[in-house]
Length: 389
Image (cartoon, rainbow, N blue to C red; front, side, top):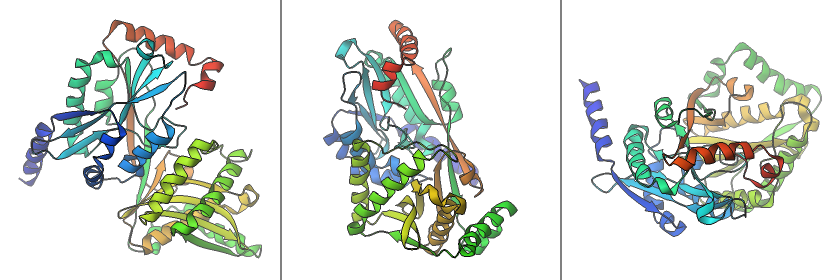
């Protein structure tokens, strides 16, 4: 009986999420901030990329304003019959090659950057997403002249199947790894595999065996953020340039990317929502990772370390110390970010699969433009000047 009541409640929510408003300026988007934050707090898995501040900072710092690509804000807010905000779609029309009405028009979510924004898509509770997408689809098909194709992210398998246009290659799904935390470290450790327990033991023994002292610290105060970020950028770049181990891109190699992260991190620090985790060896910072405090959940973002200490598995040690700290602070879980690499899977996390889809406009020109653009995008010159996904 309880199950039937739950189903009825969800159907009621779904049928009321129907009022759509289009948003064309960042001022209008910023006006949603209080309601948007309240909406984010209802999401089962917390991550910084859904929040209004991340999206507003992204638009101001990283939107494209170049000859070959120009972004126009075209976001959506959806409300139920009582006026409550139930969804935000922070979207933009990217015009390529940026020549107004003659350009290719791609509707996509904020976050079209070199992996700085790890999760993109519609911001709403999963119970509401089908109804919200149906409302969006009705609008978009009625305004098909605005776009040639849509790049959807963060979908369920069924939604991706419904929105994917036939006959074209679809983007790969993205996986988010999340580890729930027990009340104490010993319980967490006991739940891990034998290999992981051995890896934990070796991390600490190898340092002690060589007479090295490590200290773990958490940077929180705004006054300490700038120097901590300077260390992060330096170590992140060193890790990316290392020829050994798993290849890692330098996500913050350009000035705009660093400016974006620094501004956003400082704002979070003032709100006591930023954590920079660090390992020192003999007093010097050797590894670091950025974390975002999302209510009772912790999101682990990018990291960096000095490759000279590779043999000591410093990043594993840093995550171990961070897990222990998060448990002591009362966090309910740690989001290990996206990707199914071994460094995440060894923690035996839950996985949330985020599916993607490309939807071609019904207009006759759009399929031709999509196929032509896809071919042209493989050319070296266009790769150099176009935004990389």
